[in-house]
Image (cartoon, rainbow, N blue to C red):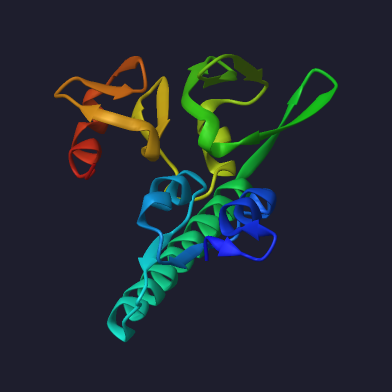
Length: 180
């Protein structure tokens, strides 16, 4: 509620905001609705509250919690997908979601991220066998890309973020099967 003894519901919501609670205001003060939503209230019910309106709020809470659980599960899934590479004497834990493309460079492989790249002492074909199945697709004898990074497919090139990479003739049929 907005009016409480010695304080307001808005003050309480503000003081506990760091815990990210689900907040629903039930009050007879419509003039504080904007303030309530600015404090991330999920709903704002005006009194007298009907059973139907309370039910709508409960459904909204259930939907929000379900989406939050799915988002957390997806983030945990993505955080769990990484590879460990060796750069010199250092071992680096590299999240798969950060890879933009992978390039063959004779007996080495260059792993390109948005803001830097790594060289590893392994041919591209060998490196691709270390990745989880279905994560990357070979598009050229010199290039492979994470399927999730492909933003556009053209007849002779693949767009990954800000990069355009050629499609080799040998790989065109496989690339054509992709669905974006």
